[in-house]
Amino acid sequence: MESLGMGETALWLGILVLIVSPMLGVAVSMASLFRERDLKWAGVALLLIAMTAVATLISYLF
Amino acid sequence: MLFSLILVGVLAGVTGALFGIGGGMLIVPILVIFYGLAAKDAAAISLVGIVATSVGASAVYVDKGISNIRLGLFLEITTVIGAIAGVVAATYISNAALTVIFSLVLVYSGAKMIFNPELAVEPGDCSGKRCFTYYDDVQKKDVGYQIRNTKSGAAMCTVAGVLASMTGIGGGAIKVPIMNLHMHVPIKAAAATSNYMIGITAFAGAVLYFAMGDISLTFAGAVAVGGFIGSMIGTKITSHVDGKSLKRYFSVLLFFIATVMMMDAGGLF
Image (cartoon, helix red, strand yellow):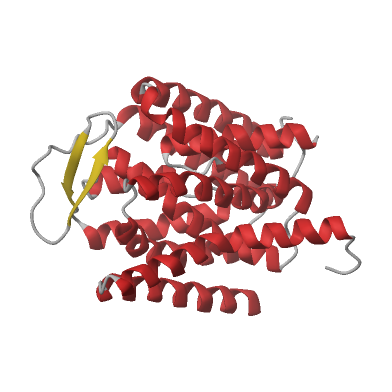
């Protein structure tokens, strides 16, 4: 991200927000499922978020 | 160039919303053939476009209750594992090999569309804990369905995840037949659920490419804008089009694109 102009920075941020939005949706689904006391499926959503985060981190590091 | 990229995104978004795919099958070959990008670069841009298509389409389908979020979350667990493996694998595979793999996926998807009819799920099949319903706009009634073969379906989705990340598609063309034919989800619910899932699958690949700086911001931004617009259009027209004929024409297009991609990989262009 070195030496990006304002336009490119905005574009970089916009694409970053877009890319993470599906996982934000999963987080919202998880919160909604917790509120409905549907703990089994809320757990599935939490597992998905955790696995995605860990797998992405491992892949990035290696 | 920007305008043409946005148009590419719109085309991908419309087809994506109609068929439950992300449009990567159009984005990748167009970027490779007409813009001269390497397959891996095109795949990275395509994944961003797929996220945009998914965001646009799933916002409508989730709101209407057609997408089965619970099923999507469950299947995504194994799909994401495959997607991460696919990104890692893509770094070790040559551009030509990636192009060939992509072409084979297109041929498979096209053949599936022509030779495997949809499974018509009969109303009243619904009983027990894996029973879900959605309201069908065309039939004007609630449609119930019972999901079957969940474990094998989840395992198959791992393959979808690998191919998705490796080739820059969302995997919807593989997931929709898995859900419909193997897991007995009605085709509309399968396509809508796939639209929800492909964004998550594409995220897994896109975030890695983004972190490694492998995404052209201008290309990705333009395709994403077009993809979002196209998905909005696609969700509006989906109940007005004849799905069977459209699938046949789309299959022919996929075969044509696969042929051109193979020729490109073979250096004939």
